[in-house]
Length: 258
Image (cartoon, rainbow, N blue to C red):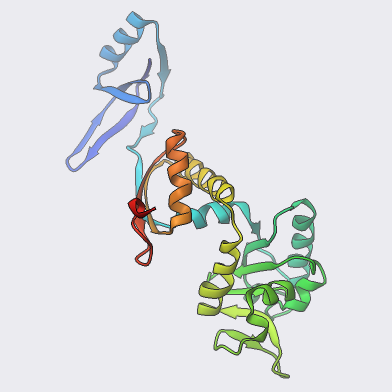
């Protein structure tokens, strides 16, 4: 049993209610109220007493709409935020590729508007670094990505003439894909290569990240069946550090349909 005392502890916001102490046991809050009561109980049971020294304690936050699978993927991928040039992007890709054994290399965060070269990267830039496996690097806006030639071939986009597949002056794909070509084709092709164990890893990383930032409940929007099965396995093993409310993708079966 642990008592937390001398804090600025919010119990509710409507109406605003604050206390100075709380008592916790077996991951449940047993009491909120005065320092004196908590100190007395902790002393009686030989528990632990934590002096909050006036720090503020808030109830767990709730994120009602998020994509838990993509958060986990994002936390695992190559971070390209803040790169100032294609040269620097290629350097980060090279360093990441040396320590990655995944089937695809996925990254996020580049912004060509701050690049020294003043242009978007192309598949040829990526091919110079990685040519033996698919690479997909999304822009900071999350509506555009650049793929290497291997990824363009794996997705079939190399031979498609779609509005979202950018081409050069000769009509050849540059590797830059936007909107539906990115969302519905490139990203979905990558996700189709993921195993149940991959999803379990992503969900654990995402949930632990949420918990570390004070988020104790999330609403997982557009959950597909592969995600559902991974979450079910984690739940069966009692490995949830937070609460997850699942909203299935409209096109998916109900969980009780198998």
